[in-house]
Image 1 (cartoon, rainbow, N blue to C red):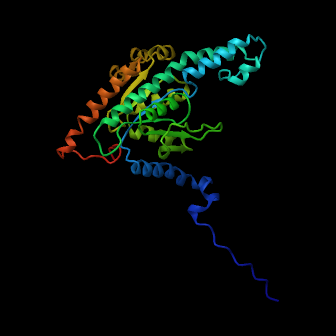
Image 2 (cartoon, helix red, strand yellow; image 1 turned 90 degrees about the vertical axis):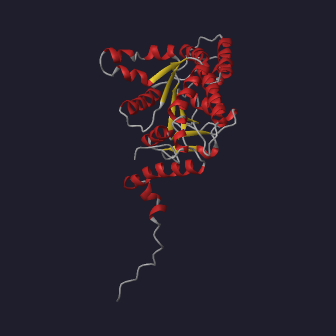
Length: 313
């Protein structure tokens, strides 16, 4: 008796539509390439030529929010203990009358650090108003953030309030970091790979502003400094470190020169600023000198106008 014939097969999924393959280790190279090619296509479509990147803490909040929550806490008068947490006490806990001393201290610090949120917001607005005034076929020096809350939100918010575009390069984390509402929708990105996100921070940037922050901010700042120090960037990138009093408590960069671990000229890779107006003047002057004045040669045909950013290869 002949064997029973197998059932007809359905068509196999196309490789690029097969989630089992794409989400497997074997599909990693495709995922990495996608996080290069898809943002590049969107930047070209939106006519983004270059950016100014804002780094800083995700934990800072607007001044009015921080003051309101601190007032709620101080009015409770409660001394009852609560489990210590990293974030400042929020409204619900404040109303319950059970904020811990640690969370009360964090709430007080939130008011102190909220000035940086407001300063980032103002600086982004100043920069956006200026960049909009430039005559260009593409969008120049577009405010860019990591896409989340805190200083990132402040930067996107300031650009939005000034009537300009802004970019959010978000990262998918175990604890969700949702994109803030002020990002230009067509320029709202989400990455799986930190290194691809960092690539887009560095590749498009013509300037960087580093506001007070934690491990992530330090990581991003030193990565850009290292790229500049080693001439891996095919452009001059201005770096403004905002809030000298904060940063000089965190790390003494001059010791690196004294101990011979960096060159004295490396200390010139960044400048400190303490007001939005001071930071804006440093950014504007650097962008004009290092980029806009040089670009006058484009009109004379001496160098090629890049479609997006610029690279050696």
